[in-house]
Amino acid sequence: MVRLLKGVFRIDTMMGLINLEHEHDFLNELTYFRCGAAVPFAGRFRMIDFTLSNMAKSNISEVAIFTRNKYRSLMDHLGSGADWDLDRRHGGLFILPPDWNDPTDISKGDLSHFHNNRDYFERGKSDYVLISGSQFISNTVYQQLFEHHLETGADVTLLTTTYQDLLPEHNGCIKVKVAEEGSVASLTNDPKNPHVFSGVYVIRKSLLLELVDECIADYKNHFFMDGIKANLNRLTIQSYHYDGYSSIINSVDSYYRQTMALLETKSYKQLFSDGEHVLTKVGNQAPTKYSGESKVTKSLVATGCVIDGEVDHSVLFRGVKVSEGAVVKNSVIMQRCTIEPGARLENVIMDKDVTITKDQVLKGAKEQPFVIAKRRKI
Image (cartoon, rainbow, N blue to C red; front, top):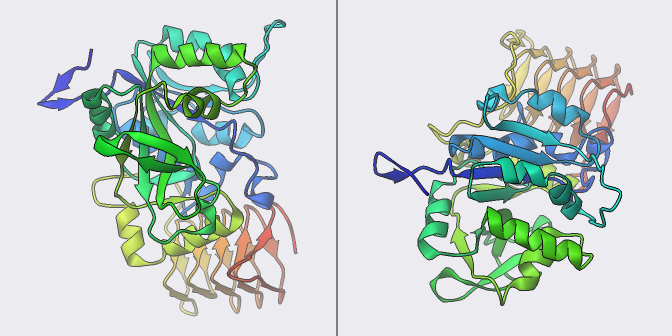
């Protein structure tokens, strides 16, 4: 039963699931040592922060994460879930790495996660499950999505959005053709269709488990493709259109493009709108120090940095040091990097704890930025 609070729907009858199984190492050097969901983004966040924050702000009090490999960094970032108010006695945050103990298990792909963690869903008190990945970046709450799902009586409701300017990252996305009254007529990979499935959808828990059993029995390996898309004619599937700011990050060039887009005031304000905070792991660094010789223009600079050189149109994460005479332009510099005197960087993505020594010159292209893996010294 859906409860009411001050005249609006409460969605604490819905549990959250962040399914990372099919999100491969799409960011090259940035995912050498971590999964894509743990990649730093927008100066002080990780990509998973946006999905997790949306769930937390939507009063979803039990959230599970399916992850298969390179999840140490993710676990370190999420901890107990306290920064998202998910360190709870009942419910809370569950990171569910692969732990296959059933020798008779024939499940594959993300279906093996559902099979081996079935008790998580059966013990949960929620009647509905909201499933998402980490590649869809938005800042919203899911109340209206859930209301739409209940009001239409749909089996599944997909969160969709429209991109008038289709970019390379949209090519790999599922496109939605919507019929009358918002019902989904087809799911395709039509490169000209601007209606994109975000990867976020709502489904009744009992139906989810029923479809999981059917897919496993038929030796399938992808819950959404084999359980939902393949049953489009059998299920009632609705579309809920999201018209807020969003982006999809599934490659190095899309990561760089969407990071640079946040240096535009309009885009930044749309993503980080007033009253809709994105939650992340708390840091306690001192304010950034700018020397008299420093020059910083049109950039995002996090706390704990020391800027003695020049920074232009760039994003600097916490604890970055830019020495006197160094120039950083059109670049993304992650935590605790050091750029020594005279070094020049342009169109560079630099992972954590990298040192660029004196007078080095590194330059990539806007279409193909130069990426440096973490803990390197150049």
